[in-house]
Amino acid sequence: MEAGISAAAAYPGTPSTEILEALAEVAEEYGVYVEWSTNEKVALEVGIGVSMMGLRALVAMKHVGLNVASDPLMSLGYTGVVGGLVVVSADDPNAHSSQNEQDNRYYGLHSYIPVFEPSGVQEAKDMTRELFQLSEEHRTAVILRTTTRLSHSRGEVMFGAVERVHREPVFHRDPERWALLPPYSLRKHREVLERIRTLEEKLGEWPFNRFVEGDGDTLIVSAGFAHAYVREALDWLKVNPPLLKLASTYPLPRALAKRALEFRKIVVVEELEPFVEDQLRAFAQREGSSAEIHGKDLFPRVGELNTALVASGLSKALGVSFDPPRGNAAGVELPPRPPTLCPGCGHRSTYYAVKLAAARARVKPVWANDIGCYTLGFFPPFRMADFTWSMGSALGIGMGIARFSKDPVVAFIGDSTFYHAGIPGLINAVYNQYPIVVVVMDNGVTAMTGHQPHPGSGYGPTGEKRPAIPVENLARACGVEFVEVVPAYEVARLRDAVERAIKYAREKNAPAVVVARQFCALEELRMKRMRGEAVVPYVIDQAKCVKCGICVDQFSCPAIVRENGSIKILTELCAGCGVCASICPAKAIGPLSG
Ligand SMILES: Cc1ncc(C[n+]2csc(CCOP(=O)(O)OP(=O)(O)O)c2C)c(N)n1
Image (tube, rainbow, N blue to C red; front, side, top):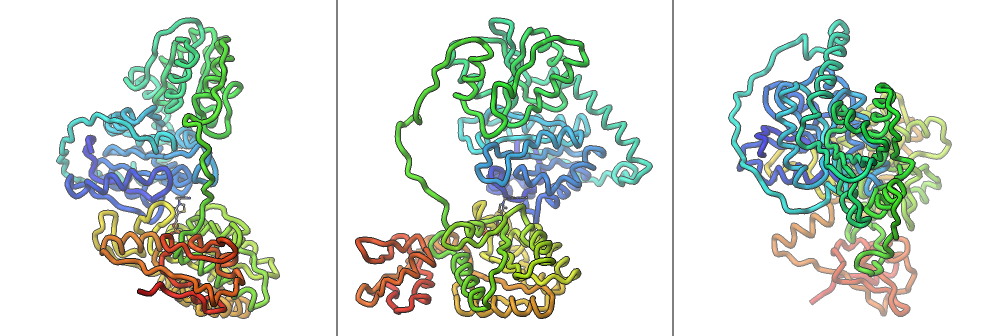
């Protein structure tokens, strides 16, 4: 807001989601356009368009989101920008909520887009503002790389003035610049190399990069958030070596790198890959320097850093002793809290129904799964995820399997994931005639990342009305002839629909789509609470219960537990969906009356 952005576009993904949510809260007040885009590629392209209008835009995504946006990103490196464009890549060392812990700084190196890494919350805010300036001055987009530890930090932040920037939006018509046609591409390649060389020089004076004087001839170089660990570790070790805090890690600021080589020994502290370390090694080699360079020989390449790991590595490099602290700070054993589908979640009844359908059809499907809350179908008792890969892959990989599998392939995909990356797969299934059953787990929102709306939700990030595009319409438009929509709580209907779908796909050698629809139970509860409506929980009539265990073992709702030899519903957890009542063979479950 301080930088005067005109627009922000994002696709949710931990740990980036809160950026757009926070901007959405003040969007109307400051006249900023915000959107949840269909996927990250679209978000980045929207940002590029806004920049072509001479306006500033921020685009945010999680690290794997940048893979999806990487096609336009690579060209963006060549073209550069008009209005400032900051692309936030929220990386996730330790893969806390991701399928990998890829280090997206390499995207900067790969696309010639400079990379910046803040070391704390204040700096994240201040640096973002400055990066818009830098982006415009050097006509380049920039990557602001954060990591989970920083993205999920809270701290005191001193705000600056929010100056309302009134820029006249003007389309900067320049086809030779924007149309990436072969004759222009080589010229642009040369231009971008020049731009990077200029930045190599200029960033030496950029105030967020800092040398800190200290004792001895070993220099500690830290990149981004690792700097916070270094400061704390040095306090623990009671030593005061000279420091180079790098906030811009690509391109490596030449003057600072040169100054670093004056030290006998250099220790690079950075999370994940040896990104700065390798650049520094290459620079040292070119400069004929004999400085001793350390990095990943002292610090792990896998997982997150922490103060103890950094202190341990630094103690070796500096030749001081270090006793690692034991136990967690509070000295408390925390109970494990394995992730589970919520009480009332429509995904649970869908898995239950699909399993029944497979049993009835006497088939043992390959369970193709995707990314979302429904990935929890991986765990017992369902065990209905033979693989999960990246968004949309349930369909793509599922098709590769279906081409040669004797067993049917049943693919599960969430609604947000369907809009994001499922549609091309579905078109492929129709066009190339794949007998795949696609169960769209439609809960109306992007639940996994915190219930953000998507193109099927009917509203936008600030709650305003937007047109809804139902999954079934898209499936039909893709050419799928078997499309059935069933409420996910209606287990028997859903079971029958999936059984029909399995038969249809096999007989017609074509995809079949079943949309299992039930609004997200958590969101539903929240709305009920807001409307002042009570949830009517279900209870088990112990006189009728035959203790078959179907509700607790096979349906496995977390609100249903075994206690002192009987089965009980925890009314405070029960969402009142009533699915357990519908599957109880003894008809022992009903709503709490009175
Ligand atoms: C490329 C990419 N972008 C974003 C994410 C983060 N993410 C994980 S699952 C998911 C979507 C979940 O929504 P949906 O498919 O509707 O399933 P739900 O969680 O609602 O069950 C998102 C955005 C990701 N893993 N990969």
